Length: 101
Image (cartoon, rainbow, N blue to C red; front, side, top):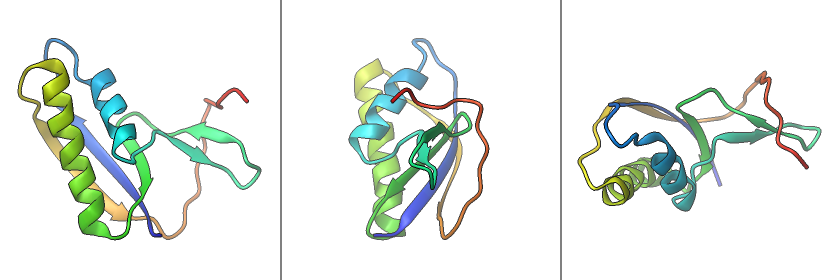
């Protein structure tokens, strides 16, 4: 299954949409952590997610579903000011945040 990466900017509202957005994203297959070749999990940069989806359309649909679920959770409209979803063929990364085992 192809791997995808998404980056997004949310309009900051009250209540803050960021926590609910990440919770919803995980429910739809998007995650803020990446696994290294050594098996350790590293945090991606803020507002960056990865996920495994059958194709680009499924990845975009999952991002849109994340927005809708976040709106339900915070009780107000959520504007994603800009976003990109791209297939991830290879990657290199560095992160100062490693998940506890």
